[in-house]
Length: 264
Figure 1 (cartoon, rainbow, N blue to C red):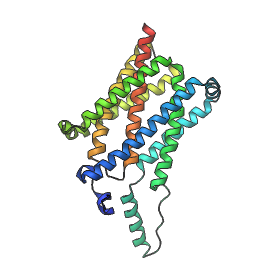
Figure 2: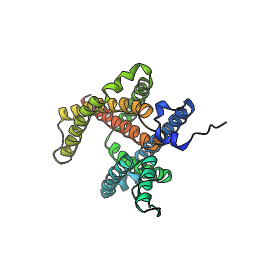
Figure 3: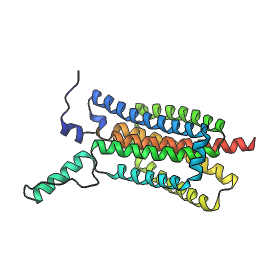
Figure 4: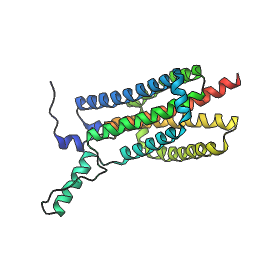
């Protein structure tokens, strides 16, 4: 039997303060979306890895890879910065007051739930395309090992983040995120420079370990934030955040394992 939840309650109350049923529904939505994203991504990667004709296509059309990268960035930024439903309704209300009762128009960048789901699907498809091409340069056994290790780390970190024992981390979350942001910028800078100048063997290993640490901590912090600091209508944005953490963690572990494999 479903329970009626008023709209104003849903929009203005954070998940941690909601009723247990609302929290459970929110968790179910977030992890259902996240599971669908991950399954599609790794299914696409596996399909490309086992189909030589598709491999030839993606290798010959590198422009599509750059287009997918650009699409990933744009859709990620849009989903991250788009106003929540409550904010958009407040914006419409203020516009109506300024127009003295005239019809307010919703700004083009404000997305409905269907629009958010559509944009998330585009984001996931583009990300899956880029990942499938990146993993082609690695040995399939290394990719499988990285996938297993990533799954173990994600389950362990998620269980720790959901535990009440680690509530104290939220008190220091702002400071931790400040330093994580600097480390993330460092990773981005190294990654961009490697496209033009490459990376030495030692620097490549350091880059992999740094990425693994950064995105493991990000996964821990984001999981805590998802269930304690967000609103019940933000499940799509939260799923995207966790998805990015997991994908980047997987790529970092893949880099580390590949380096170890080459040394053997």
